[in-house]
Image 1 (cartoon, rainbow, N blue to C red):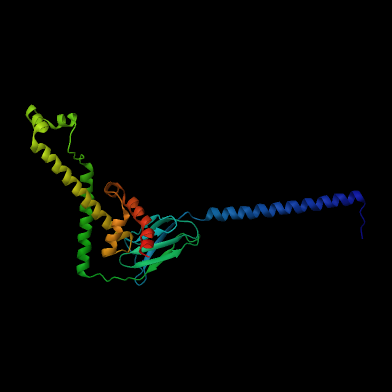
Image 2: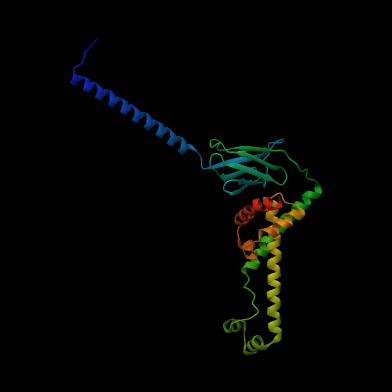
Length: 257
């Protein structure tokens, strides 16, 4: 057995300690590198599909919601959807024809597939109703654009506004003193406000029918519970309005309990 003197023993101990510290550093470094690489490989979004369980065809017009963030996506005609997610997030799918389903994202699968069983058998009559509804949605968009592009009707006009309306001294006097002109302006205000209320009410019904499962009286109660102004309903994008509606769903359900 080899015997070391005091100096040699110190050198050996120093070398052993150095090797141990180096090994610990290398192990920590590699573990950290592996963790960072794994984290970097976690996608921040998914490009998934919602398919019919029997036919394998894509489910169109389904709402796809991240339960944590309340972000909303929508499936296209092939069932594809895009959604920002984090590992562990719950992805909820709502379809008018296929009902509701949910999955928890594992943080790995970049293209999750959700299968749903068809719940509603469409008949010829229902198809006609869907076609009519599509036309009404197009009409709604056109009326919204027209309403938002109109000048705001006012009962009282400033002097500058009266001058803008007047094309001659006679029309100037008419706008200033005629009871008929004042009456017409009041009627214009009432009609414009009525149109705003009707369009806002109908747009809310469309969004609620797409984004929630509420029907009939329950949908009407939920619409009143939302307390959204007509201006917000008319001027917000479909995404903004859908998000605002979904924010109120949990409160409404808790109130019912």
